[in-house]
Image 1 (cartoon, protein in one colour):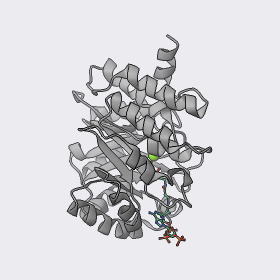
Image 2 (cartoon, helix red, strand yellow):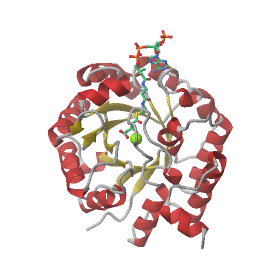
Image 3 (cartoon, helix red, strand yellow):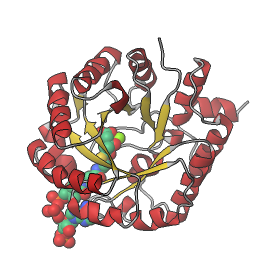
Image 4 (cartoon, rainbow, N blue to C red):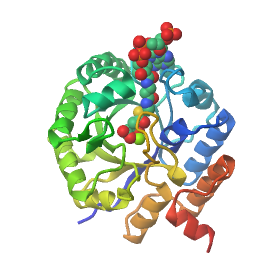
Length: 298
Ligand code: HMG
Ligand code: MG
């Protein structure tokens, strides 16, 4: 019933660290990426090529990308909002870029300063240029179940963005519960909307754990056969344009659940917990992961 294997994308270095108040040096971000790949992560969202005025935490994007010791078989991805970001990102040789839209007009305006339709217009040349260079293109649909400015978001909102992304050649559709208000049935409906335009192998879940729903939501998606998820080491993160949103579900917690279900991730949980402790020590707090906390106190 459940997939035998799951691929996790650790978005901690990007989604996690984009929201830190105090600056995190590039060297620490690079070491975190190294520890994640040593723990068995095969895809890591490293940074974003967005405006440093909007997200100063990611201003060291090129330096971080240049400092990573790349391991064969690992995909390094970066967020790109427009051609300017793409041109800057290309020099860093990402394996994959992520264009990010929203299922609500209000969130699109606050996050990327344009309407949904305008965002698709901006993404179209980015997608074309990336694919011409053989760079894989992933899409993310923010606020897929609820928006901090608009409230509830309908599956039709998700379906519209999924359709538009498909039309411009985005290869993969990530469905994101940015503020963590989704509950299993709502998330399944959002996933079904994305699945109208993307095959099962090209849909993934991105769950923030604000209300503690990310694991049940993951389980609900596993029941649908969805086998790819974003998660964040030590539960780092939040979105600067989604007030009150906490981090993504902790990678440690997802791995603990999946391994307990006999689902293969290729990840070494002990090494993963070490990676989480490394970044949490730097940030001066405890990992925001129940599994990591339990394992560290064992
Ligand atoms: P804008 O101000 O509308 O853009 O911002 P613009 O084209 O009018 O340019 C204004 C200035 O920004 C210019 O500089 C541009 O050169 C510069 P100036 O002439 O004033 O000196 N600029 C850039 N600089 C560097 N890189 C770029 C870039 N583009 C323009 N790529 C823009 C539009 C999208 C750039 C802006 O709104 C922005 O950067 N937003 C940040 C969005 C962001 O990073 N949000 C967090 C990530 S998304 C997320 O976390 C959600 C996700 O996790 C899924 C989920 O959970 O929902 C993915
Ligand atoms: Mg996010």
